[in-house]
Length: 265
Ligand SMILES: Nc1ncnc2c1ncn2[C@@H]1O[C@H](COP(=O)(O)OP(=O)(O)O)[C@@H](O)[C@H]1O
Ligand SMILES: [Mg+2]
Image (cartoon, rainbow, N blue to C red; front, top):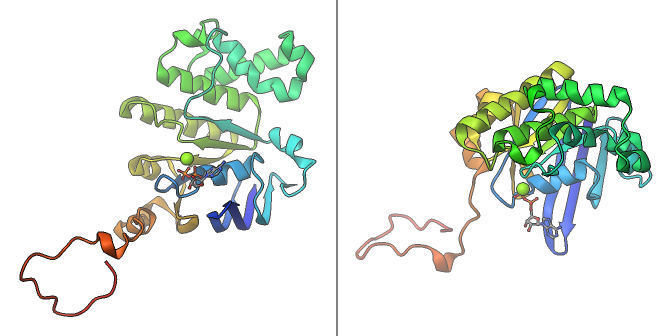
């Protein structure tokens, strides 16, 4: 479904992705963990064609992302779920879900909000999957944060994608709501066989919802495996802090004599 090999991405002198190898199978739920700045969002942007890697091979749903003409085709296969769901507040929940069909419907009909009947039915089904069928006619702005994110998920499902990329989808929610939104994403995508790559901060959610965990540190994959293998050593590799420069090392207490000279801080 996703095949990435030796991806590199630089922003000026900042070498953000440093040789990423990642294969994701259809229907697999991959959770990506890593410190802020590790390169998680950049990797997702490569996977949805918003950013082009400088080096490496990348295909998603059989589309080679190094070819310019493939970007539009890609939009039909890959949907995004954002932290700040990006709903249109004054539109109804149903119309927000329908915006997932924009790529398929074309610009003019969508401006006139002329969606084919089957698209409206599909959007309603997607709302049902996320438990919000009864809110179809409510304005998006009247919903709670968790409900809004469910609409974001419904909109992504309405795209009928093969892959959903979610960038910290529950970062703005309280823990209980966050867990129920993760559960919703997990169940809907599992039923439909959609592959997911989901960036998260919460290790406990990664363990609970991931089929597989990928840990990124300073642009490299430092863990790739089952949640059960995510032990202290793996967490340390993922959440390693960059070594502080020697000048900032804490001074030893007075009278302290190092037994051995050990390099580094
Ligand atoms: N559009 C951009 N232009 C320049 N630098 C960027 C851009 N996007 C991200 N970066 C840099 O790339 C690094 C990784 O960022 P990001 O992928 O957002 O990490 P994460 O999502 O893991 O927090 C950071 O150093 C960030 O400043
Ligand atoms: Mg990010």
